[in-house]
Amino acid sequence: MKMSNLFVQTLREFPSDAEVISHKLLVRAGYIRKLSNGIYNYLPLMWRVIKKVENIVREEMDRAGAQELLMPFVQPAELWLESGRWEVYGKELMRLKDRHGREMCLGPTHEEIITSVAREGIRSYKQLPVNLYQIQSKFRDEIRPRFGLLRGREFIMKDAYSFDADEKGLDKSYEIMAQAYKKIFERCGLETKMVQSDSGAIGGSVSHEFMVLVNEKSENNAGENDVFYCSKCDYSANSNHAVSVLNPAQTDGGFTHSQIVDTPCVHSIEELSEFLKIPQTVICKSLIYVIDGNYVLALIRGDKTVEETKLMNAFSGNEIRIARNDEIEEIMHKSGLNAVAGFIGPKGLKDIEIIADETIKDLKNFVIGCNINDKHLAGANWGVDVSLPEKFADIRLVEENDKCPDCGAPLKVTKGIEVGNIFKLGTKYSKPMNAVFTDKDGQEKPFVMGCYGIGVTRTAAAAVERHHDEFGIKWPLSIAPFTVIIVPVSDRDELQLKTAQEIYNTLLEHNVEVLIDDRAERAGVKLKDADLIGIPFRITVGKTITDNLVEFKNRTTGETDVISPEEAIKRILQLEI
Image (tube, rainbow, N blue to C red; front, side, top):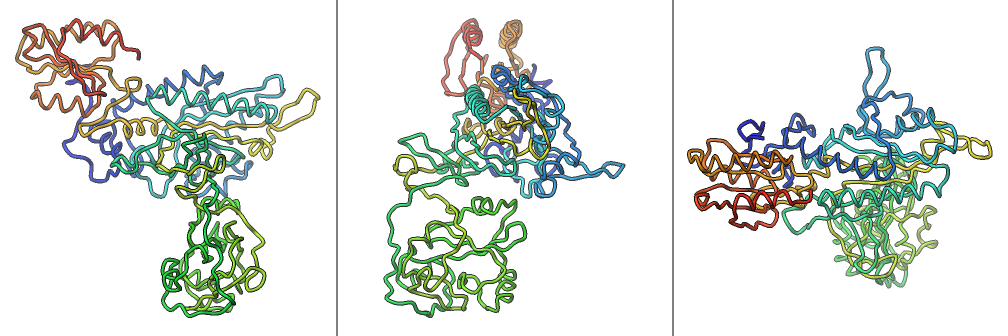
């Protein structure tokens, strides 16, 4: 490809609306252009990268025994009603009607469609196991799309679905996919960590995410989730799923008897701790949330933080948020009380479900809100001054240096970008949709399913997050749009132009993906564009060509050598791509 013919426009400055480096570089280097909020055009350079990622995915999926198909992007509501997700999926589901008034949606995922395909095409256990996958555009109407391709509304994804006769078969399919994923991301030049995670709107009993870890202390902080991991064993989990063993802490407040104490204008745990001269560990924190429109009071030890996904899952919810002041006022009014946030407690509240974290069980002679403004109850004890809640769950956010649940070593935390996920769905979709097969005894049984997703466009963006420098992108060779770029320094030097063209022609004859910058531009512009676009290797033909020498640069390492054109060609042809 000649640079003069390539449809690309590089920019001098980063786009003003870009927050993370992958978004900044992909726009500035001419890979993507924004069409609407969270929706992007994939320009020719980007499309070449995407196709490279897709090809790697296809090769490894096919090698793992999966079969590719393609399902519709627009889906009928009937199937979603069968599964029970039409009403509960949330506002991310883009709903619409066709000209006949039939309700449809833009597919954010394809569990319902693939389940309908299986129930029509698989009748007997003899046909199992089956794994079907597609690479398809998806649409999720994110409330706050950001980070460019890392959290867009429209994106390209590979989703696979396994069908087995029993849990044992699912375990095997799950492991096969986990190993395939490791190979896929390794081939894409990404080091990933497989972490335990929340199943979210997809559902199922077990799920893992494949996370690209980033350094949160650097500018390259596009990580969306905290990942907790143990350096001494294999334990790792997303923050919304992580568990830990607490370090020892003071849980006895030391008060000799219970009493209402004045705490004027003390609203936060930090302020209360300082005002009463007590550690936060002897305070019971009360927080009101709204989960799917219902009020919930969460109790947790004062020095700990509620993990909202865990709390939402404890009620099988789909949406969660902290209650507003007017909602707290409404709850107080119904209960015949009058307290604002900071002084709330469980005693006397009506029409609200109460849930407690395990951390409150050990509290003795503790401090808790008593639903009176500017006052708290000190020296409280469960079953004496305050009723112990009936509903308990792990709703605590794990913290760095908590003890690993498997080996007891201190946990570490870093940021991660999710590029893939795998779920054990079980019969979550097959049962309600009556997707059954006949077993060896002639009995009908629902399929035991698994689901396996890879964000194709997210993987490409994650590669930029991990591989770049101050000059631009440094694509891994396996997914780079071109392998090598040839840059003649002067467009007026006949020997430079002739040699550059000869190298270009030779590489083309060997089916190398090669780009030649034949533009009538200054050498500095050409070299800067080559670094910005991120082609893995550069052959610069300059004045040294009179001595039959060219500059050979490795974009990844930054190393340069002055060698003959023949040696430069040889090095490219010896690459393992």
